[in-house]
Image 1 (cartoon, rainbow, N blue to C red):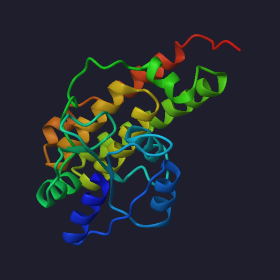
Image 2 (cartoon, rainbow, N blue to C red; image 1 turned 60 degrees about the vertical axis):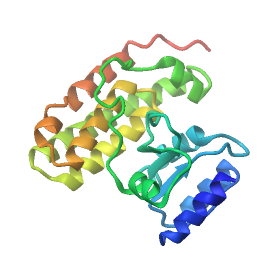
Image 3 (cartoon, rainbow, N blue to C red; image 1 turned 120 degrees about the vertical axis):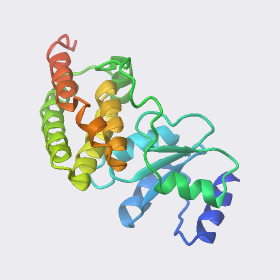
Length: 221
């Protein structure tokens, strides 16, 4: 099977590898150990790779993990890189250590707030979900402000950290345009492209998201 082959390659290149057959088992392993990244591929017993990615991105203890999906297509939003099958030691190493993918990262045609995606995550628009979004709007503006300030100070570590947190949280909240902007910002900072990074209006995107959340209709009981 693919996952056993990937585990063998990781062992050959000196990386520790653990296998999980369910989403909950994967999360338990990640929370109990100090892993650098997660390789998503075959369907798990109680979900799939994108479900596991969403759980990781919304976990305060795990959201900074690097996520790689085994696929020949561009990585979905919220996943850092793709590695085509059959994998090799070189392709796995590159996917696990290289910069985040630029695929779709610079586009602005994503919705500010993808209600269909959000409702698929949460199971419907509820008063609790709206309250969560309102809290997130304030957090997003704070992270965006801190990321931009760090970029202006040429502080790569702080800028990438804030952008990474903002990216994962935004995608998990259905804030697709903000998530893509944060991903493009993170990629630019990773290669010290400060002109590109400071030209991305993270604060403006976070403000547009807050406005869209305020305009949400009252959820039905």
